[in-house]
Image 1: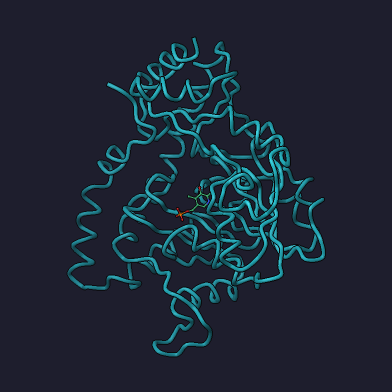
Image 2: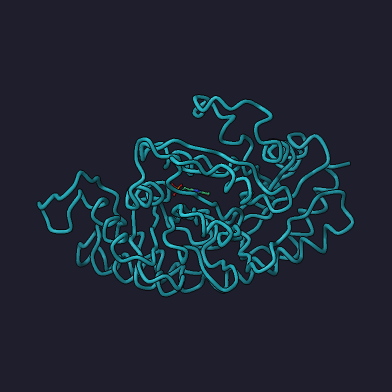
Length: 362
Ligand SMILES: *Cc1c(COP(=O)(O)O)cnc(C)c1O
């Protein structure tokens, strides 16, 4: 008997009936792409996040790329991102035709070092993309007065706030509903949220083959739409997201207590943040890969988010940035591991995780 990193079966059990009814509804009226379910989800998600406009898209990477394109990022522009993030942040910038400019992280919170981001601004900088990593918001407000556009990577923070404000309220954000995210679909899905109606309309236009009226193509767009079956799942899960996030918060507190006398670095919540604990990330003193391997062999679904900073991936070696460029991100990448965390995790499961972690560290 082990403990998985995330338990999608347990999450499904809570919404199974509602999802089945919703799927029947969609199949009965055959509105498979777009339609009433998608529109209802977009409305409900905008309301939940407190940001007025929401556009459902095919996945989180597209959400970021379409947000970048909507604000006018393109070839010749630079976009500043944290070096420690999921690769999609960088891919979105590259796919929009712009140049990726990574910066280091704050070693206490793993969030983008905002001083480093501001110092990296040049004449060519068009946007800064803070990543709300692991479930808490980066200090976005510190980036707000430099004249650059802020595009938030909100893939890991559904429901999180900073000084009471949700992601997207600084202008525009892209989020992911990949199954393992706090709000997860049953396949790929994502959304752009924005305070700006024109930007939201541009995203919707790009995502629908460049036009909002059938066969009227105003610009060269693509196909990146949210489908109705995913919207059914997302609506059912959104109704339970606040409760799920509260359960994650309680579980994180339990880990904090259980790990108090264990030789690991526990996660830190930035002041002013309401954390939603997408991931509970600790640092171990040595032999991280060995610790993860022993945990996994012992049935504990420990993960690493992420083992390679963007600038050290093969995909981005064209940036010409060598080891040593971002010491905090590089050091963390060798020491971090993520412990199992999901809303339904039990106290007994968490005790087992910590017991086996202690054994793996010994
Ligand atoms: C999941 C994730 C994405 C990409 O989302 P997809 O839906 O998988 O395309 C982008 N950024 C971060 C930080 C993520 O965790």
